Image (cartoon, rainbow, N blue to C red; front, top):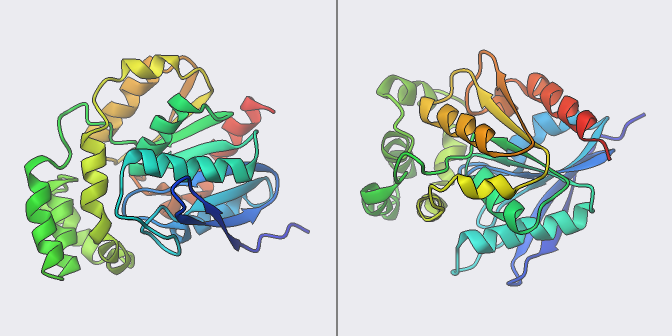
Length: 268
């Protein structure tokens, strides 16, 4: 019988920060770098589905969940965090990055290519800054202490969500959890804006890469994934029908099928 019980462990990043990791399942390792308003717990549904075939290492990125933090935040620090988890997982680990976590994964993969990469709609700023002039007023809202107002501001100005979508989001069970993570959102959006819009640099990422999109995801994210697919030398582009940017929550079985198919093709 497969033991799917999750256990928490920790790694020490290059700057000494403790990074928490939820380890689940058995089989080939899959390291998960979550998005800006996510933590390891958000990936548990998918981890449970994958548990008979893959060992997932879902990361609490610095400043999230049970992980530590530091005043010195940058993409480089976040990449060092994920590198430490890859060391824990082993040389045949596959790296999955979602949204902002996909930006972290892309940058790391250029420096230290893992066995394979899975990218779920990384917001490479090819259409201009994600935060830009909206970051400073967002930080003011956070400083005032109303994190729900901060989440509304961020979804409106960073994600460019329409008002009806924001209202639907507010009624969802994850709203309060997402709001609690807004204090670190500004620095992550800043990191996205400094990532650069040059996609051609990823032409030298010569490892198998799966690009995942949701049918109802924002058009800008779909365009970025399509353009990455054109640049990456060994890539596959798939779409989760009927779902959007969070299929790991809304369609974990469907997402797991795509991941397992890709892993089977990658081989060892």
